[in-house]
Image (tube, rainbow, N blue to C red; front, side):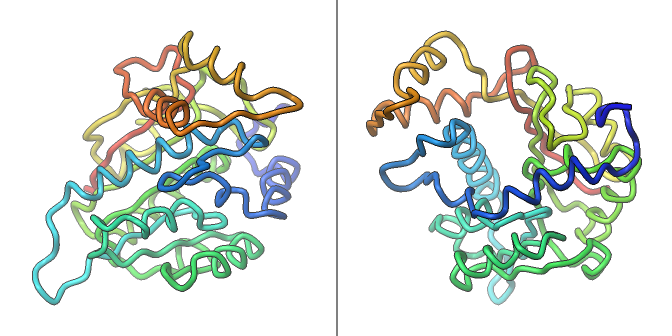
Length: 261
């Protein structure tokens, strides 16, 4: 039985992702300085686009009353690169950022690179207190969770969020071939079903649409023996990867905004 059909945990699938944390690769691309990309990671433009979507989303919420702190949790934070990028945004200075992951090596990297700006926890969602966080992100995580464990996983996230708290989720779409380190990819319907017991969906969209111009541009800039980067082309690619589409067709990733019931 293939990993995509199996509803139980597959150690081979899990070990591929764990092995990638031998190096903290999420810190290679940057959304606020040049150079932005890496010759060895073609996903950089899409990754930065997701950071910018999350920044704009978080900045859209009202700041807390004087003396209060908004607590945000990045679930399945890995090496902490994503949540660390959020801390560098001046617009989000009123937020106390947290991250949690079960991978000890990933959390060690997170504590080294995040420079004390994020409070990281190595452990299970059940280690988190109930109704503790005001918002959350779940970035490219749920595809690493066996389908049989998803209801409990989502319930754990919901338990740790305050009632009405927002959650931003991204996943790879079924428009991409299934990767060895993933249990499955998603369309709009299958992703929504994962969360509808605990959350209300407030928005869903496809992004990372590699249309003709971005695809040809990346092919020209990223060759086997050389890599060309300019500020203009990098910003163009990030902008194109971050465009939101009402259909998943042609989009490599899905973004979804939710609210805890």
